Image 1 (cartoon, rainbow, N blue to C red):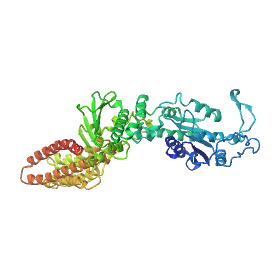
Image 2: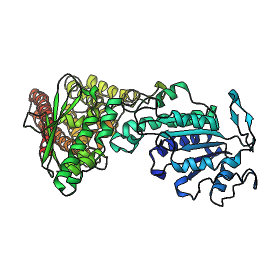
Image 3: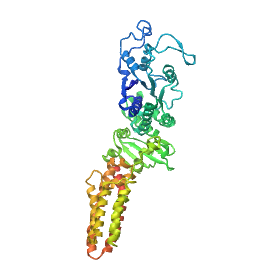
Image 4: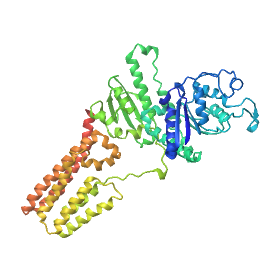
Length: 542
Protein backbone atom coordinates (compact mmCIF):
# COMPACT_ATOMS: atom_id res chain seq x y z
CA UNK A 1 0.00 0.00 0.00
CA UNK A 2 1.40 3.38 -1.07
CA UNK A 3 0.59 6.38 1.10
CA UNK A 4 0.34 10.06 0.21
CA UNK A 5 0.09 12.65 2.98
CA UNK A 6 -1.63 15.87 1.92
CA UNK A 7 -0.82 18.89 4.08
CA UNK A 8 -3.46 21.49 3.26
CA UNK A 9 -1.86 24.71 4.41
CA UNK A 10 -4.48 27.18 3.22
CA UNK A 11 -6.34 29.10 5.95
CA UNK A 12 -9.45 28.56 3.80
CA UNK A 13 -9.23 24.82 4.38
CA UNK A 14 -11.11 22.73 1.84
CA UNK A 15 -12.56 25.93 0.31
CA UNK A 16 -9.08 26.81 -0.91
CA UNK A 17 -8.58 27.39 -4.62
CA UNK A 18 -5.28 25.54 -4.36
CA UNK A 19 -7.04 22.56 -2.83
CA UNK A 20 -9.06 22.14 -6.06
CA UNK A 21 -5.79 21.48 -7.88
CA UNK A 22 -4.61 19.17 -5.12
CA UNK A 23 -7.80 17.11 -5.31
CA UNK A 24 -7.44 16.80 -9.09
CA UNK A 25 -3.82 15.64 -8.77
CA UNK A 26 -4.65 13.05 -6.10
CA UNK A 27 -7.60 11.80 -8.15
CA UNK A 28 -5.20 11.34 -11.07
CA UNK A 29 -2.92 9.23 -8.89
CA UNK A 30 -5.94 7.19 -7.76
CA UNK A 31 -6.86 6.58 -11.39
CA UNK A 32 -3.59 4.68 -11.79
CA UNK A 33 -2.95 3.18 -8.36
CA UNK A 34 -6.59 2.63 -7.34
CA UNK A 35 -6.79 0.58 -4.11
CA UNK A 36 -2.99 0.58 -3.80
CA UNK A 37 -3.05 4.24 -2.76
CA UNK A 38 -3.96 5.48 0.71
CA UNK A 39 -4.63 9.21 1.08
CA UNK A 40 -4.36 11.09 4.37
CA UNK A 41 -5.28 14.80 4.39
CA UNK A 42 -4.45 17.14 7.26
CA UNK A 43 -5.85 20.67 7.24
CA UNK A 44 -3.25 22.63 9.18
CA UNK A 45 -5.58 25.50 10.12
CA UNK A 46 -7.71 23.02 12.07
CA UNK A 47 -4.81 21.68 14.14
CA UNK A 48 -3.26 23.02 17.33
CA UNK A 49 0.41 23.59 16.54
CA UNK A 50 2.61 25.97 18.51
CA UNK A 51 5.53 27.86 17.03
CA UNK A 52 9.02 26.42 17.45
CA UNK A 53 10.70 27.73 20.62
CA UNK A 54 14.22 27.36 19.30
CA UNK A 55 15.24 25.45 22.43
CA UNK A 56 16.93 22.59 20.51
CA UNK A 57 15.61 20.09 23.08
CA UNK A 58 14.70 17.80 20.18
CA UNK A 59 18.46 17.56 19.53
CA UNK A 60 19.69 17.43 23.12
CA UNK A 61 17.25 16.59 25.93
CA UNK A 62 14.77 14.46 23.93
CA UNK A 63 16.52 13.48 20.65
CA UNK A 64 14.06 13.14 17.80
CA UNK A 65 11.10 14.32 19.87
CA UNK A 66 9.80 17.85 20.43
CA UNK A 67 9.11 18.87 24.02
CA UNK A 68 5.94 20.73 22.99
CA UNK A 69 2.98 18.43 23.58
CA UNK A 70 0.70 19.33 20.70
CA UNK A 71 -0.55 17.81 17.45
CA UNK A 72 2.77 18.23 15.65
CA UNK A 73 3.93 14.88 17.02
CA UNK A 74 1.17 13.11 15.07
CA UNK A 75 2.10 15.05 11.91
CA UNK A 76 5.72 13.93 12.19
CA UNK A 77 4.61 10.31 12.51
CA UNK A 78 2.46 10.66 9.40
CA UNK A 79 5.36 12.25 7.51
CA UNK A 80 7.70 9.40 8.43
CA UNK A 81 5.12 6.85 7.30
CA UNK A 82 4.31 8.47 3.93
CA UNK A 83 5.68 7.66 0.49
CA UNK A 84 4.74 11.13 -0.80
CA UNK A 85 4.12 14.39 1.04
CA UNK A 86 2.04 16.87 -0.89
CA UNK A 87 2.23 20.46 0.36
CA UNK A 88 -0.84 22.41 -0.77
CA UNK A 89 -1.12 26.14 -0.09
CA UNK A 90 -1.42 29.53 -1.81
CA UNK A 91 1.42 32.01 -2.13
CA UNK A 92 1.37 34.47 0.81
CA UNK A 93 3.55 37.54 0.47
CA UNK A 94 6.01 35.75 -1.85
CA UNK A 95 6.24 32.85 0.58
CA UNK A 96 4.06 30.41 2.48
CA UNK A 97 1.17 30.93 4.93
CA UNK A 98 2.11 31.09 8.62
CA UNK A 99 0.79 27.60 9.58
CA UNK A 100 2.93 26.00 6.85
CA UNK A 101 6.06 27.80 8.03
CA UNK A 102 5.29 26.71 11.60
CA UNK A 103 5.05 23.06 10.52
CA UNK A 104 8.34 23.34 8.60
CA UNK A 105 10.06 24.88 11.62
CA UNK A 106 8.74 22.06 13.80
CA UNK A 107 10.28 19.45 11.47
CA UNK A 108 13.65 20.03 13.13
CA UNK A 109 13.45 16.71 15.11
CA UNK A 110 13.68 14.89 11.77
CA UNK A 111 17.27 16.14 11.36
CA UNK A 112 20.47 15.52 13.33
CA UNK A 113 22.36 18.38 15.01
CA UNK A 114 25.76 18.07 13.38
CA UNK A 115 26.72 19.71 10.13
CA UNK A 116 27.88 17.97 6.98
CA UNK A 117 29.01 19.25 3.62
CA UNK A 118 26.26 18.70 1.08
CA UNK A 119 26.04 19.06 -2.68
CA UNK A 120 27.75 22.15 -4.01
CA UNK A 121 29.59 22.61 -0.72
CA UNK A 122 26.55 23.83 1.18
CA UNK A 123 26.16 23.06 4.89
CA UNK A 124 23.39 20.60 5.78
CA UNK A 125 22.00 18.78 8.79
CA UNK A 126 21.71 15.06 7.88
CA UNK A 127 18.37 13.32 8.25
CA UNK A 128 17.76 11.44 11.49
CA UNK A 129 15.71 8.80 9.68
CA UNK A 130 17.41 8.19 6.29
CA UNK A 131 15.06 5.28 5.63
CA UNK A 132 12.12 7.71 5.59
CA UNK A 133 12.67 9.40 2.23
CA UNK A 134 9.20 10.59 1.27
CA UNK A 135 9.03 12.33 -2.10
CA UNK A 136 7.87 15.92 -1.86
CA UNK A 137 5.26 17.53 -4.11
CA UNK A 138 4.33 21.21 -3.99
CA UNK A 139 1.05 22.56 -5.39
CA UNK A 140 0.43 26.28 -5.03
CA UNK A 141 -1.65 29.06 -6.57
CA UNK A 142 -1.26 32.82 -6.37
CA UNK A 143 -3.14 35.98 -7.31
CA UNK A 144 -0.56 37.32 -9.76
CA UNK A 145 -0.61 36.63 -13.49
CA UNK A 146 2.74 34.84 -13.70
CA UNK A 147 5.12 32.59 -11.76
CA UNK A 148 8.15 34.71 -12.67
CA UNK A 149 9.40 37.14 -10.02
CA UNK A 150 6.82 35.86 -7.54
CA UNK A 151 7.70 32.27 -6.63
CA UNK A 152 11.51 32.42 -6.63
CA UNK A 153 11.87 32.63 -2.83
CA UNK A 154 9.45 29.77 -2.19
CA UNK A 155 11.01 27.56 -4.88
CA UNK A 156 14.48 28.16 -3.43
CA UNK A 157 13.34 27.32 0.10
CA UNK A 158 11.67 24.07 -0.95
CA UNK A 159 14.65 23.06 -3.09
CA UNK A 160 17.02 23.65 -0.16
CA UNK A 161 14.87 21.62 2.25
CA UNK A 162 13.55 18.81 0.03
CA UNK A 163 15.52 18.87 -3.20
CA UNK A 164 14.13 19.44 -6.68
CA UNK A 165 10.71 17.77 -6.38
CA UNK A 166 7.59 18.20 -8.50
CA UNK A 167 6.08 21.68 -8.29
CA UNK A 168 2.77 22.68 -9.84
CA UNK A 169 2.62 26.45 -9.54
CA UNK A 170 -0.51 28.07 -10.90
CA UNK A 171 -0.81 31.86 -11.02
CA UNK A 172 -4.24 33.48 -11.44
CA UNK A 173 -5.51 31.09 -8.75
CA UNK A 174 -8.47 33.27 -7.76
CA UNK A 175 -10.08 32.38 -11.09
CA UNK A 176 -10.91 28.95 -9.64
CA UNK A 177 -13.42 30.68 -7.35
CA UNK A 178 -15.34 32.20 -10.28
CA UNK A 179 -18.20 29.98 -11.53
CA UNK A 180 -18.45 31.94 -14.78
CA UNK A 181 -14.91 30.78 -15.63
CA UNK A 182 -15.62 27.12 -14.94
CA UNK A 183 -14.86 26.06 -18.51
CA UNK A 184 -11.38 27.58 -18.38
CA UNK A 185 -10.54 26.31 -14.90
CA UNK A 186 -12.04 22.86 -15.55
CA UNK A 187 -9.71 22.45 -18.54
CA UNK A 188 -6.73 23.28 -16.31
CA UNK A 189 -7.88 20.83 -13.63
CA UNK A 190 -8.04 18.15 -16.31
CA UNK A 191 -4.35 18.71 -17.00
CA UNK A 192 -3.56 18.58 -13.26
CA UNK A 193 -5.36 15.25 -13.04
CA UNK A 194 -3.34 14.00 -16.01
CA UNK A 195 -0.17 15.07 -14.17
CA UNK A 196 -1.27 12.95 -11.20
CA UNK A 197 -1.74 9.93 -13.48
CA UNK A 198 1.71 10.32 -15.00
CA UNK A 199 3.42 10.94 -11.67
CA UNK A 200 1.87 7.83 -10.12
CA UNK A 201 3.40 5.71 -12.88
CA UNK A 202 6.82 7.27 -13.49
CA UNK A 203 7.41 9.74 -10.62
CA UNK A 204 7.60 12.41 -13.30
CA UNK A 205 5.31 14.51 -15.50
CA UNK A 206 5.66 14.61 -19.28
CA UNK A 207 6.84 17.73 -21.09
CA UNK A 208 3.51 18.27 -22.92
CA UNK A 209 1.57 18.14 -19.64
CA UNK A 210 4.03 20.47 -17.93
CA UNK A 211 3.65 22.90 -20.83
CA UNK A 212 -0.12 22.94 -20.40
CA UNK A 213 0.22 23.45 -16.65
CA UNK A 214 2.52 26.41 -17.23
CA UNK A 215 0.18 28.08 -19.73
CA UNK A 216 -1.67 31.01 -18.07
CA UNK A 217 -5.41 30.59 -17.76
CA UNK A 218 -6.04 34.07 -19.16
CA UNK A 219 -3.85 36.52 -21.09
CA UNK A 220 -2.10 39.06 -18.89
CA UNK A 221 -4.14 42.12 -19.94
CA UNK A 222 -7.42 40.31 -19.54
CA UNK A 223 -6.50 38.93 -16.12
CA UNK A 224 -5.35 42.30 -14.80
CA UNK A 225 -8.59 43.94 -15.93
CA UNK A 226 -10.66 41.19 -14.33
CA UNK A 227 -8.66 41.20 -11.08
CA UNK A 228 -8.80 44.97 -10.72
CA UNK A 229 -12.56 44.99 -11.33
CA UNK A 230 -13.14 42.34 -8.67
CA UNK A 231 -12.41 44.58 -5.67
CA UNK A 232 -15.87 45.81 -4.76
CA UNK A 233 -14.77 48.01 -1.88
CA UNK A 234 -17.07 50.89 -0.93
CA UNK A 235 -15.69 54.25 0.07
CA UNK A 236 -16.88 55.98 3.29
CA UNK A 237 -19.24 58.29 1.39
CA UNK A 238 -21.05 55.28 -0.10
CA UNK A 239 -21.66 53.74 3.32
CA UNK A 240 -24.50 56.16 3.97
CA UNK A 241 -25.78 56.15 0.40
CA UNK A 242 -27.18 52.77 -0.55
CA UNK A 243 -27.91 53.79 -4.14
CA UNK A 244 -24.34 55.03 -4.71
CA UNK A 245 -23.01 51.72 -3.41
CA UNK A 246 -25.39 49.79 -5.66
CA UNK A 247 -24.36 51.82 -8.70
CA UNK A 248 -20.72 51.14 -7.95
CA UNK A 249 -21.43 47.45 -7.59
CA UNK A 250 -23.20 47.43 -10.96
CA UNK A 251 -20.30 49.26 -12.59
CA UNK A 252 -17.71 46.88 -11.14
CA UNK A 253 -19.72 43.86 -12.20
CA UNK A 254 -20.03 45.20 -15.75
CA UNK A 255 -16.29 45.93 -15.79
CA UNK A 256 -15.64 42.30 -14.89
CA UNK A 257 -17.93 41.25 -17.72
CA UNK A 258 -15.98 43.46 -20.13
CA UNK A 259 -12.72 41.95 -18.88
CA UNK A 260 -14.02 38.50 -19.80
CA UNK A 261 -14.58 39.44 -23.46
CA UNK A 262 -12.97 37.04 -25.90
CA UNK A 263 -11.51 38.99 -28.88
CA UNK A 264 -11.55 35.81 -30.95
CA UNK A 265 -15.34 36.27 -31.18
CA UNK A 266 -14.93 39.47 -33.22
CA UNK A 267 -16.09 38.80 -36.78
CA UNK A 268 -15.18 42.19 -38.22
CA UNK A 269 -18.47 43.86 -37.31
CA UNK A 270 -18.84 45.70 -34.02
CA UNK A 271 -21.73 44.76 -31.77
CA UNK A 272 -23.14 46.82 -28.93
CA UNK A 273 -24.47 45.01 -25.87
CA UNK A 274 -26.54 47.35 -23.74
CA UNK A 275 -27.34 46.32 -20.18
CA UNK A 276 -29.83 48.25 -18.07
CA UNK A 277 -30.10 47.27 -14.41
CA UNK A 278 -33.73 47.93 -13.61
CA UNK A 279 -33.39 47.92 -9.82
CA UNK A 280 -30.42 50.29 -9.82
CA UNK A 281 -31.77 52.39 -12.72
CA UNK A 282 -28.36 52.59 -14.37
CA UNK A 283 -27.06 51.10 -17.60
CA UNK A 284 -23.91 50.59 -19.65
CA UNK A 285 -22.90 49.70 -23.17
CA UNK A 286 -20.27 47.11 -24.06
CA UNK A 287 -18.87 47.73 -27.54
CA UNK A 288 -17.61 44.38 -28.78
CA UNK A 289 -14.89 44.72 -31.38
CA UNK A 290 -11.19 43.87 -31.39
CA UNK A 291 -11.47 44.72 -27.70
CA UNK A 292 -14.37 45.38 -25.36
CA UNK A 293 -15.01 49.05 -24.55
CA UNK A 294 -17.22 49.94 -21.60
CA UNK A 295 -19.32 53.07 -22.05
CA UNK A 296 -21.91 54.86 -20.01
CA UNK A 297 -25.47 54.63 -21.35
CA UNK A 298 -25.73 57.43 -23.90
CA UNK A 299 -28.85 56.64 -25.89
CA UNK A 300 -26.87 55.32 -28.86
CA UNK A 301 -27.92 52.42 -31.02
CA UNK A 302 -27.51 48.89 -29.65
CA UNK A 303 -27.34 45.42 -31.14
CA UNK A 304 -28.81 43.71 -28.09
CA UNK A 305 -30.35 45.27 -24.98
CA UNK A 306 -30.86 43.41 -21.72
CA UNK A 307 -33.12 44.83 -19.03
CA UNK A 308 -32.50 42.97 -15.79
CA UNK A 309 -32.22 43.34 -12.02
CA UNK A 310 -28.54 43.35 -11.05
CA UNK A 311 -28.86 40.32 -8.75
CA UNK A 312 -30.44 38.24 -11.53
CA UNK A 313 -27.61 38.91 -13.98
CA UNK A 314 -25.05 38.24 -11.25
CA UNK A 315 -26.71 34.91 -10.40
CA UNK A 316 -26.62 33.92 -14.08
CA UNK A 317 -22.93 34.87 -14.31
CA UNK A 318 -22.14 32.76 -11.23
CA UNK A 319 -23.97 29.76 -12.65
CA UNK A 320 -26.59 29.83 -9.90
CA UNK A 321 -29.36 30.41 -12.42
CA UNK A 322 -29.78 29.33 -16.04
CA UNK A 323 -30.08 32.35 -18.32
CA UNK A 324 -32.63 30.70 -20.61
CA UNK A 325 -34.78 29.58 -17.67
CA UNK A 326 -34.65 33.06 -16.17
CA UNK A 327 -35.74 34.55 -19.51
CA UNK A 328 -38.58 32.02 -19.75
CA UNK A 329 -39.74 33.04 -16.27
CA UNK A 330 -39.69 36.72 -17.22
CA UNK A 331 -36.88 37.64 -14.80
CA UNK A 332 -35.27 39.80 -17.46
CA UNK A 333 -36.11 41.14 -20.93
CA UNK A 334 -34.10 41.23 -24.12
CA UNK A 335 -34.55 43.50 -27.12
CA UNK A 336 -32.78 43.40 -30.46
CA UNK A 337 -30.61 40.56 -31.75
CA UNK A 338 -30.93 37.42 -29.61
CA UNK A 339 -28.02 35.65 -31.30
CA UNK A 340 -25.53 37.46 -29.06
CA UNK A 341 -27.13 35.89 -25.99
CA UNK A 342 -27.27 32.49 -27.67
CA UNK A 343 -23.50 32.72 -28.28
CA UNK A 344 -22.76 34.21 -24.85
CA UNK A 345 -20.06 31.70 -23.93
CA UNK A 346 -18.27 32.46 -27.18
CA UNK A 347 -18.14 36.17 -26.36
CA UNK A 348 -17.62 36.18 -22.60
CA UNK A 349 -15.87 33.01 -21.45
CA UNK A 350 -12.32 34.22 -21.89
CA UNK A 351 -9.91 32.56 -24.32
CA UNK A 352 -10.69 29.10 -25.58
CA UNK A 353 -9.65 26.25 -23.31
CA UNK A 354 -6.54 24.33 -24.38
CA UNK A 355 -7.31 21.61 -26.86
CA UNK A 356 -7.04 18.00 -25.77
CA UNK A 357 -4.65 15.66 -27.46
CA UNK A 358 -6.07 13.78 -30.44
CA UNK A 359 -6.15 10.50 -28.52
CA UNK A 360 -8.24 12.15 -25.82
CA UNK A 361 -10.84 13.69 -28.14
CA UNK A 362 -14.15 11.89 -28.21
CA UNK A 363 -16.07 12.68 -31.39
CA UNK A 364 -19.80 12.82 -30.69
CA UNK A 365 -22.08 11.46 -33.37
CA UNK A 366 -24.71 13.94 -34.52
CA UNK A 367 -28.30 13.40 -35.51
CA UNK A 368 -29.45 14.05 -39.07
CA UNK A 369 -33.06 14.75 -40.00
CA UNK A 370 -32.45 13.59 -43.57
CA UNK A 371 -32.15 10.05 -42.23
CA UNK A 372 -35.67 10.43 -40.85
CA UNK A 373 -37.23 11.99 -43.94
CA UNK A 374 -35.61 10.18 -46.90
CA UNK A 375 -37.23 6.75 -46.36
CA UNK A 376 -40.67 8.42 -46.23
CA UNK A 377 -39.89 10.40 -49.39
CA UNK A 378 -39.29 7.11 -51.18
CA UNK A 379 -42.86 6.12 -50.40
CA UNK A 380 -44.45 9.47 -51.21
CA UNK A 381 -42.67 10.11 -54.52
CA UNK A 382 -42.10 6.63 -56.00
CA UNK A 383 -45.07 4.60 -54.79
CA UNK A 384 -47.58 6.42 -57.04
CA UNK A 385 -45.27 5.79 -60.01
CA UNK A 386 -44.50 2.10 -59.42
CA UNK A 387 -45.62 0.03 -56.46
CA UNK A 388 -42.90 -2.60 -56.88
CA UNK A 389 -40.06 -0.14 -57.46
CA UNK A 390 -41.24 2.36 -54.85
CA UNK A 391 -41.93 -0.33 -52.28
CA UNK A 392 -38.60 -2.07 -52.87
CA UNK A 393 -36.65 1.18 -52.62
CA UNK A 394 -38.49 2.10 -49.43
CA UNK A 395 -37.55 -1.26 -47.87
CA UNK A 396 -33.93 -0.77 -48.97
CA UNK A 397 -33.85 2.76 -47.50
CA UNK A 398 -35.20 1.44 -44.20
CA UNK A 399 -32.51 -1.26 -44.08
CA UNK A 400 -29.75 1.22 -44.92
CA UNK A 401 -30.58 3.18 -41.76
CA UNK A 402 -28.60 0.61 -39.79
CA UNK A 403 -25.47 1.39 -41.80
CA UNK A 404 -26.06 5.13 -41.35
CA UNK A 405 -25.79 4.56 -37.62
CA UNK A 406 -22.04 4.05 -38.02
CA UNK A 407 -21.65 7.75 -38.83
CA UNK A 408 -24.76 9.40 -37.40
CA UNK A 409 -26.56 9.18 -34.09
CA UNK A 410 -29.86 7.41 -34.71
CA UNK A 411 -32.88 8.37 -32.63
CA UNK A 412 -35.89 6.32 -31.61
CA UNK A 413 -37.80 8.08 -34.41
CA UNK A 414 -35.27 6.92 -36.99
CA UNK A 415 -35.82 3.35 -35.77
CA UNK A 416 -39.63 3.70 -35.82
CA UNK A 417 -39.50 5.27 -39.27
CA UNK A 418 -37.45 2.34 -40.53
CA UNK A 419 -40.02 -0.13 -39.20
CA UNK A 420 -43.03 1.77 -40.56
CA UNK A 421 -41.54 2.55 -43.97
CA UNK A 422 -40.24 -0.99 -44.34
CA UNK A 423 -43.65 -2.42 -43.41
CA UNK A 424 -45.56 -0.19 -45.82
CA UNK A 425 -42.98 -0.91 -48.55
CA UNK A 426 -43.49 -4.67 -48.10
CA UNK A 427 -47.27 -4.22 -48.33
CA UNK A 428 -46.76 -2.32 -51.61
CA UNK A 429 -44.57 -5.06 -53.05
CA UNK A 430 -47.24 -7.62 -52.05
CA UNK A 431 -49.80 -5.72 -54.13
CA UNK A 432 -51.45 -3.49 -51.51
CA UNK A 433 -53.66 -0.68 -52.73
CA UNK A 434 -51.52 2.42 -53.18
CA UNK A 435 -54.59 4.63 -52.65
CA UNK A 436 -54.57 3.39 -49.04
CA UNK A 437 -50.82 2.94 -48.52
CA UNK A 438 -49.83 6.50 -49.45
CA UNK A 439 -52.35 8.13 -47.05
CA UNK A 440 -51.32 5.55 -44.45
CA UNK A 441 -47.70 6.66 -44.78
CA UNK A 442 -48.65 10.31 -44.19
CA UNK A 443 -50.72 9.27 -41.18
CA UNK A 444 -47.88 7.22 -39.70
CA UNK A 445 -45.40 10.05 -40.16
CA UNK A 446 -47.79 12.59 -38.65
CA UNK A 447 -48.45 10.40 -35.61
CA UNK A 448 -44.71 10.16 -34.97
CA UNK A 449 -44.59 13.94 -34.59
CA UNK A 450 -47.76 14.21 -32.53
CA UNK A 451 -46.93 11.39 -30.12
CA UNK A 452 -43.47 12.90 -29.54
CA UNK A 453 -45.10 16.07 -28.19
CA UNK A 454 -46.11 14.11 -25.10
CA UNK A 455 -42.57 12.85 -24.45
CA UNK A 456 -39.69 14.55 -22.67
CA UNK A 457 -38.00 15.51 -25.94
CA UNK A 458 -40.23 16.34 -28.94
CA UNK A 459 -39.21 14.93 -32.30
CA UNK A 460 -37.78 18.05 -33.91
CA UNK A 461 -35.60 18.83 -30.87
CA UNK A 462 -33.58 15.66 -31.48
CA UNK A 463 -32.40 17.04 -34.80
CA UNK A 464 -32.52 20.84 -34.49
CA UNK A 465 -30.34 20.72 -31.33
CA UNK A 466 -27.28 20.34 -33.56
CA UNK A 467 -27.71 24.00 -34.54
CA UNK A 468 -27.88 25.08 -30.88
CA UNK A 469 -24.84 23.54 -29.14
CA UNK A 470 -25.99 19.93 -29.22
CA UNK A 471 -27.37 18.31 -26.08
CA UNK A 472 -27.01 21.59 -24.15
CA UNK A 473 -30.02 22.88 -26.09
CA UNK A 474 -32.20 20.21 -24.49
CA UNK A 475 -31.77 22.03 -21.16
CA UNK A 476 -33.07 25.28 -22.67
CA UNK A 477 -36.79 25.66 -21.83
CA UNK A 478 -37.37 28.21 -24.62
CA UNK A 479 -35.85 25.86 -27.18
CA UNK A 480 -37.84 22.90 -25.88
CA UNK A 481 -41.17 24.73 -25.83
CA UNK A 482 -40.63 26.12 -29.33
CA UNK A 483 -39.86 22.63 -30.65
CA UNK A 484 -42.86 21.13 -28.86
CA UNK A 485 -45.11 23.64 -30.63
CA UNK A 486 -43.43 23.06 -33.99
CA UNK A 487 -43.59 19.27 -33.64
CA UNK A 488 -47.31 19.58 -32.96
CA UNK A 489 -47.75 21.77 -36.04
CA UNK A 490 -45.82 19.41 -38.30
CA UNK A 491 -47.67 16.39 -36.92
CA UNK A 492 -51.01 18.10 -37.53
CA UNK A 493 -49.98 18.94 -41.10
CA UNK A 494 -49.12 15.33 -41.96
CA UNK A 495 -52.28 13.94 -40.36
CA UNK A 496 -54.29 16.40 -42.46
CA UNK A 497 -52.17 15.39 -45.47
CA UNK A 498 -53.27 11.80 -44.92
CA UNK A 499 -56.92 12.90 -44.94
CA UNK A 500 -56.90 14.97 -48.11
CA UNK A 501 -54.59 12.49 -49.87
CA UNK A 502 -57.07 9.71 -49.17
CA UNK A 503 -59.96 11.81 -50.49
CA UNK A 504 -58.14 13.06 -53.61
CA UNK A 505 -56.70 9.65 -54.58
CA UNK A 506 -60.15 8.05 -54.39
CA UNK A 507 -61.74 10.92 -56.30
CA UNK A 508 -59.47 10.51 -59.30
CA UNK A 509 -57.29 13.58 -58.60
CA UNK A 510 -53.98 12.08 -57.45
CA UNK A 511 -52.04 14.90 -59.16
CA UNK A 512 -53.76 17.40 -56.88
CA UNK A 513 -52.64 15.39 -53.87
CA UNK A 514 -49.04 15.44 -55.11
CA UNK A 515 -49.17 19.21 -55.65
CA UNK A 516 -50.71 19.97 -52.24
CA UNK A 517 -48.34 17.60 -50.44
CA UNK A 518 -45.40 19.36 -52.08
CA UNK A 519 -46.51 22.92 -51.37
CA UNK A 520 -47.82 22.45 -47.83
CA UNK A 521 -44.46 21.30 -46.31
CA UNK A 522 -42.79 24.23 -48.08
CA UNK A 523 -45.27 26.61 -46.46
CA UNK A 524 -44.78 24.92 -43.09
CA UNK A 525 -41.01 25.19 -43.54
CA UNK A 526 -41.28 28.96 -44.06
CA UNK A 527 -43.50 29.18 -40.98
CA UNK A 528 -40.92 27.20 -39.01
CA UNK A 529 -38.08 29.55 -39.99
CA UNK A 530 -40.19 32.55 -38.95
CA UNK A 531 -41.40 30.92 -35.72
CA UNK A 532 -37.88 29.93 -34.62
CA UNK A 533 -36.95 33.63 -34.60
CA UNK A 534 -40.26 35.13 -33.51
CA UNK A 535 -41.04 32.90 -30.53
CA UNK A 536 -37.75 33.33 -28.58
CA UNK A 537 -37.89 37.07 -29.29
CA UNK A 538 -41.44 37.17 -27.92
CA UNK A 539 -40.35 35.37 -24.75
CA UNK A 540 -37.30 37.65 -24.43
CA UNK A 541 -39.42 40.80 -24.70
CA UNK A 542 -41.66 39.50 -21.91
